[in-house]
Length: 506
Image 1 (tube, one colour):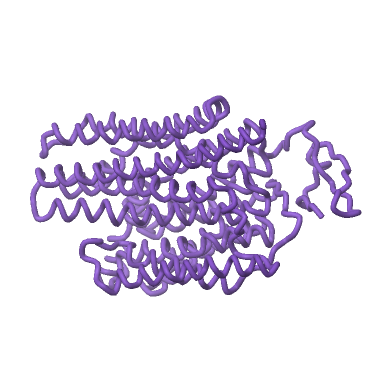
Image 2 (image 1 turned 180 degrees about the vertical axis):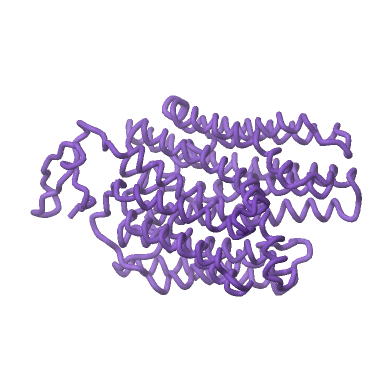
C-alpha cells in the first residue's frame, strides 16, 4: 500500500482522493493537484542548508588544519587526515545512505544524519587529541553520507513540474557558495579566535546551523515506496570495501608517485565492485531487496549519467584545487585572496543555475545541459589563453572573467543533468539513484583532485613562477579532455531521452 508521511495531506491544505489499487483490494490515499504543498519552500531551504553545511565542513578544515596541528601536535601527515577522515567514509557510505532512506523513510534518516553530524561537530570542537579528532571526523563523514542522498528524493516528493526544475536548480548556487565560502570562513573563524576558540570555532559553527535544520525538518514531506525494502548487509559490506579500496589511495595522493600497493588496492577494489554487481543481480533474482536497484540500469541513460557525473565533477573540483595551488605556490598569495579569486565562478554558477532551473530546462530540456558543457569548455579555453599571455609574477586579473564563464557553464549544466538523470525513475529507485550519483560525484571529485593535482605538481616542481603557469595550463588541457568525455556521455543520456519520447509518440 502506498504510504504518505504522517503529516497528512488534509492538514497541509492539499485535497485528497481515495483511489482503488488495481493490484489489490487496498485503498490508496493520493493527493490531487488542486493545491501545492504549502511548506515546500521552507522545507527546501532546510534541505539546502543541510547540504551546504556538509560541503562547508569538507573544505572549512583545510584552512584551519595548520592551526589544529600547532595546537594538538602530532606528525605533519596528520594534517592530511583532518580532511581525509571526513571524505573517505563520506564516499564509502553514500550508496548505503541512499538505501537507508528507502527503508526507514527519507525524512527520518535525514534527521538522524543531521543529529549525528551536529553531535560529531561538537565532539570535534572539544577533541583534546589528534586521534579523537580524527575519530570524530569519521563520524561526521558517515553522518554526511546519510544526509546527502535524501535531498533529491525529498525534493521530488514535495515538488512537481516546473517547480521541481526550479528546486533542483537551486542546489547549484547554494553548493557553489558553500564551496567558495568554506576556505574563507575557516580562515576568518580561526583568525578571529572568538572567546579563545581558535580552530574549534570552525566545528562549533555547525551546531546552531544543525539546530535550525532540525527545527524545520518536521515540515518536510515524503512519499514512501509501496514496499519497504530491507538492507542488504552483504551488499553493503562489498560496496564499502570496494569503494574504500578505490578511493583511499587517491585521497591526497600523487598519482605519478603511487606505489604498486596503491595500484593493487585500486585493482582489488574494482574486482570487489564487479563481485558486488553480480551479488546485486543474484539478490534481485531471488526476490530480495538489493542495495542498488538493478532496474536502474534498465534505463539506458542512467549508466551514462554516472559516467557524466564522475567526469564532470572531476573537472570542477580538480580545477578549483589547481587554481588555488597556483595562486598560493606559484604567486605566493594568501589563502583569503586565493578563495576570493573563485568568487566569479560562484557568482556565475548561482546566476546560471537559477536561470536554468527556472526557465531554460523547462523550455529547452537536455539542450541546456549541452549548452552548459559548451560554455564550460569556452571558459576553460579562455583561462588557458589568460595563463599563456599573463606575466608569471603578476596576479592574472583577466582570469576572473574566464572563471566567471566557467561558473556559468557549471550552473547551466547542473539542473538539466539532475532532471534528465532522475526523470525516468520510480519512487523505489530514487534512494539508490541518489546514492550512486553522489558516490560517483565524490569519486569523480577525488579523481579530479588526484589527477589534475598530480599533473600540476609534477609539471611545476621544482621550478619557479613561469613553470607554475605552464603547469596550470597543462592541467587545464587535461580538464578540457574530461569536458569532452562529459559531453560524449551526456549525449547518450539525451539520445535515450529522445528515444523515450519517440516511443511514447508511437
